[in-house]
Length: 389
Ligand code: SF4
Image 1 (cartoon, rainbow, N blue to C red):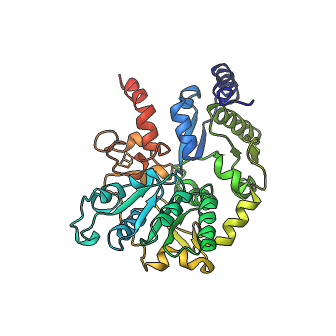
Image 2 (cartoon, protein in one colour):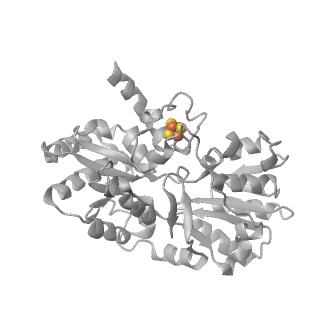
Image 3 (cartoon, rainbow, N blue to C red):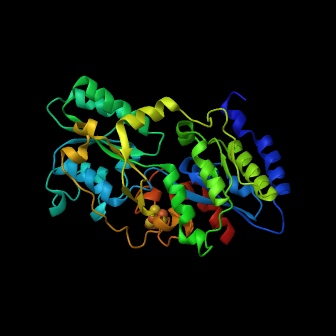
């Protein structure tokens, strides 16, 4: 297979659906979590769930980078733009994540809420960038301004951030720094497996995971071996195309039926056991583990995120501007926390699709196309409506 169409072939999908139906035993249910927002999007967009038998259920996981950003971190970025007067650069979805007081970076850019005591009186100079390198270029073009790159994401986006920090140091740039909010996949999986819903109460039954695609190209398949061995949960790493996902579900079913709990790699065209060693070394050179980091929905998780090492302290916005994180509770009606833990589904939130929509997101899961609520709003809500009729 060479082209993307081949991974979306309807005939092959129907064949896989038959194989899945034949493999799913009638006397039990199967619950698989797709960790990654990219898989959540693919499952919703291509209607993969509709091809599965009723006793095979997919549970959305917390692997959407903007969904897991807590409100307090967005507030930090807004404070930097407004109170410290920096040029704040970040990816497009990040600008739309709800912050405190009904704000977001996009609204702060427009000057909304600018008279609130906590955010000062200035419009924020907030700019959307497509890459970390774009943010570095903004710093080079504005030598008289402080430029901060608000860096978010899992292991896939961390190496490019490390590259620009090293590059800024090599160039001797004195007006560039990074607000580092990079988080780690294995810690989030461990948190789910250790949660009371999974371990004690059994309210989130989990028979296995579809492992991330892009993240695994960096970290490899080895880190998941611990979960397979220690928790007896099979993991199948899969690509983001619909046939990848269906093949992974079939592989998980076969493992569960055979009583196996192994890491298998469906995405072997891009993922190896050891991952990208060069990228890993680069990340280790620039970043170190944070002792603790707050995730939306999952709470404070030990050693679950990265911070910039002392040897690159000049490029660490948290040190440079002496700003700290303050926890802020989510909107009272928002169920993002429960959705990110696999406890609830988007349609179980009472403001889903009414007060909360992609145009006016109340919670973070409605912002990005990888968010469970946004994916269900775009592709799944019509099926809900048809089921009611
Ligand atoms: S629909 Fe909106 S408010 Fe409800 S859980 Fe999803 S993101 Fe949060």
